Image (cartoon, rainbow, N blue to C red; front, top):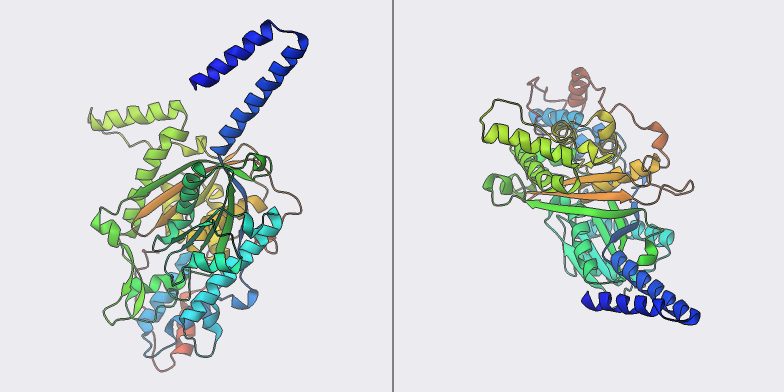
Length: 481
């Protein structure tokens, strides 16, 4: 830094005691120096050039009856569990157009390794092809590749599958994230940002999906495993990040902050979401009742770190005053929740289920307009795990709500237990001819996401699929969703 200061001082002295030609040369040198400083600053920034979300084919869509029926396609059928599964679906916040994996529609309904690989490849290749076409970037231009699939991994790795398909250059740096849960999509952004800091003039490609072939069709009897049958659906996203100065003008967004919180030291938090086997040896994903409390704690810890970076000083001072009154003065006053709407204009809350969205919205004092993108993404596409917050971002972008200079907060939750957040600043608004996964259905949203099925309809349906056994009318607990 001292050398640069000395160099500038020398140029200024020459500028003062020189001819017109010398002054012109000095001015040119100063201009060049300014451009270099601006370019160096741009390299430290992380731009989201563009992103795409996967739109599953219409033939894979599953309504309520099909979603429940495939969960009990084997004998014996337990009516109580059938009704429990039905009630979970009705309270999940999912609509009638979410998509199940292709093997569900095959005669054998056999979830094989090949079927799992096909689902992943179709998602990744479709989103990547669209992204390359829209940006003009080729696969050979990619310097960093990050692939996030939580519950499916094989050898060669998922990242190697993508690199091989697109014949990427030998120097590409590949990373394969697995077991990181639904928060891996935002976690991958944080990882790409760190890698771009030490790799100037580079492109980073992030591919996210969840493999529903291997984890979305639990066929056992344990109700803590059944929740995933009514939540997880086919989906995926592709993101192109860059630190190239020339991409600053055409990028959609600029990454301002990314915060990662991991509460795995808490045994209850560590075990609340896990891929394991039930008592009968049936494989699936278990969600424990403590999930909501664990998620609330993780979100609170994450926002406590993020708050000082984004909140106005007045809001921070009021929060500090409230904390002192409660902790030191022992005053019986209500804990103050900072108003994060002073820092962000838009919110993309993890679409893990209606209860998750409602819980986070309540804790942050968000209204239904703030939660609209989250509820509509869950209703139309389901819980797409790592790519969920990007369907929400696509919704906001397609609606034309993202204006230059506005900020968006993404909140993602995942097993472990983790809460990851990302703060984006809008750089470019939506082009009128820009395509989106919401194009064909955007006019129908927002809509009422509550199901209109009655208990009588549920009982009639159960009597059709289990004619020899009448279902019970027990009011089963579905609060986990």
